[in-house]
Amino acid sequence: MQKHALTSSGIGRFFARVSFAPIMRMNQRSAPPGPRDRATCRLRTSVILMALLAAGGCSTLRDPNVPEPIQALSEPEGGGAYELYRPSAYDRAKRWPLVVVCCGRGWLQSPNAEIRRWTSLAESSGFLVAAPKVDWPRSGFGSEEGGRDEAWRAGERHILGVVRHIQGAHNISDDRIFIYGWAEGALPALYVGLRNAEVFRGVAVAQPELDPAELGPLVGRVDRDQPLLVRYSVTDAITGKDARACAEWLQTHHGNFTDDRGTVREGVQQRVLDFFEYVVATRPWVHVRAFSISAERPLDVAFKARCSFAPSAYEWDFGDGATSLLSEPTHAFAERGVYRVQLTVTPPSGRPVTRAVAVTVPSPERAGG
Image (spheres, rainbow, N blue to C red):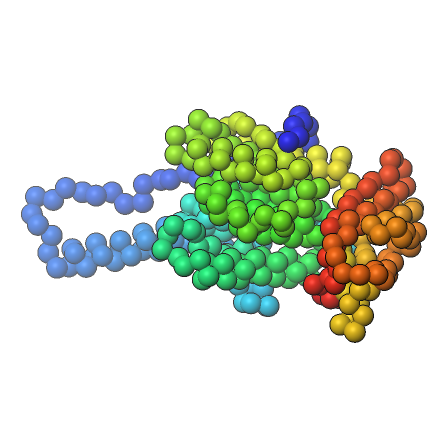
């Protein structure tokens, strides 16, 4: 477990605030209402419910705290819906960070409610924020394990499809994509973020509401170099126990874990943004991928590395005594097995960065996959 002091970015703190004003005054009547009164009451009730639903999830309404509208979109791969805020200073000539916000159930954790907690920060700090709409089934709520697992994979495909859709339409910095989840949204953020370290440079969750047993599918899939923040309060009477159990599980299974205890009632988004900025400033991103060349040559493996900088030198150690100085080498292993492949890259300035991965030969992943 690693701890550090999160440095302030110097950006003013903005929090989404919702003020609820009375929308109908109920008057006392001395006589019972007639049919016309009841019909009027039903009409008013419908109008009120429609207004409440619109306030909770309709992205056609502007957020009064920011100049740009929240866009309601769908990714074309699976047709899943999501909401996107793009700051007014967006310039396609520049590369922009992206924060994906995972949601829970109910209108308080709807995509629109969650994205509005981030729009002011996105506007002032200069990043895009997206909130996919995902129906994420939970263990213990009557869902069969097989159906639940397939639903989780479908949710994962949707979130990754949202990222690709935004990348296709905007100039996104591939090495500054992050994922965050609060309360029930923590489970999809952890599941998708930790299973896709080649996409998400960092993962953050706040006051997670989940059973650590639900994290079982992540065992063996965690990239221990991927930065992870858990912000939680153990004094919360409702979710404090779940949050602490989740943090303990992640501390055991994740090597780059930041235990961040404190208030979760306000300022969480700024705290998470500080963490993401800290990661960009201090944690070089190097991700190694291995690909099988072809079915006819199962022991030949191609290697690629994605970095947050332009390396001036590469040094590969394939774990069988062979090495390479190429940026994208291909290596023929002598026999099947699991090899510890290590890459050391030299940035333009600073110390060399080393990453090690376990590569199964033959590799289950095909080149270009």
